[in-house]
Amino acid sequence: EADIYQTPRYLVIGTGKKITLECSQTMGHDKMYWYQQDPGMELHLIHYSYGVNSTEKGDLSSESTVSRIRTEHFPLTLESARPSHTSQYLCASGGLERYNEQFFGPGTRLTVL
Amino acid sequence: DAKTTQPNSMESNEEEPVHLPCNHSTISGTDYIHWYRQLPSQGPEYVIHGLTSNVNNRMASLAIAEDRKSSTLILHRATLRDAAVYYCILRDHATNSGYALNFGKGTSLLVTP
Image (cartoon, rainbow over all chains, first blue to last red; front, side):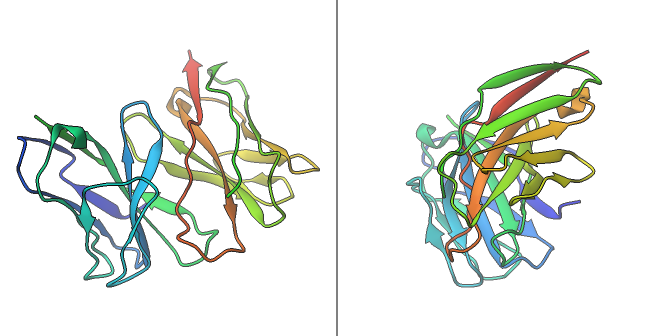
């Protein structure tokens, strides 16, 4: 059973608000990821981290930012939410080796009005 | 990572076997074949992976063609809970990169009673 958590599961918020999506894992994984998925569409990588104090942008450009101050915690922040940010955000973590499976959280469904 | 091609959708009857195909004609020698699935309203979950030999686990079997240009995920007895989008993903175990998963569109499996 994967021990990776995301909060909130659902968020409806007005334009211009600052939001932070939380992601935590208790597996001690160094690698963590954020993917974005629009309904019925593919997942796209937007951020990843190799470990504490390491963050990189993914393949899909995103106005969000991330931080990795603790191994278990990888929050994503939108400074000023817009309707174009409406999507599902999925957090994942995995071990150091490339063949290690990735474990996904349940996702946060964000709606910006 | 090399690309894969999967049918957009497939349909199966409950309790019958399901064979989900994946073509990967440009696979390299160090590419492993990984399968993930995403149940409705959930994050993806790992199913199985292999390199050359067929693989079995509690969830499924993976049959890999001798030339490795195609593979088939086999669900031996489909249940309604197997209805999901199934992703075939190639991961190069030799390169040292972010290790993020390159999700395509996958195959949407419908299981009917």
